[in-house]
Image (cartoon, rainbow, N blue to C red; front, side):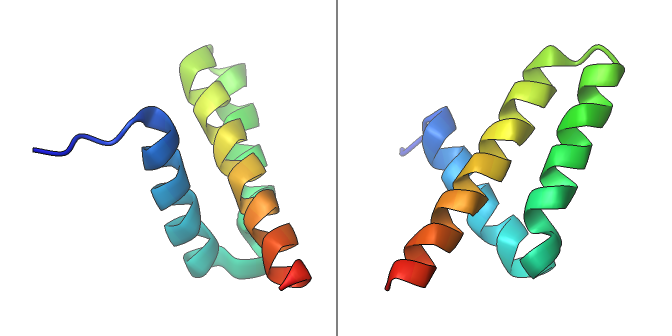
Length: 65
């Protein structure tokens, strides 16, 4: 049975999140990260920042293609 690594899971989720929210995906991910930071969820904050980074990377790749 395949169990994704955290990076693989973040990559999959970021692709889905970007498809749902398009141009607002990075902003929404960063807002979620900040909310989690404010509520004391440092792990959630870290993961949502990774989601925002992956969405940014995906966008740069799409522009280059």
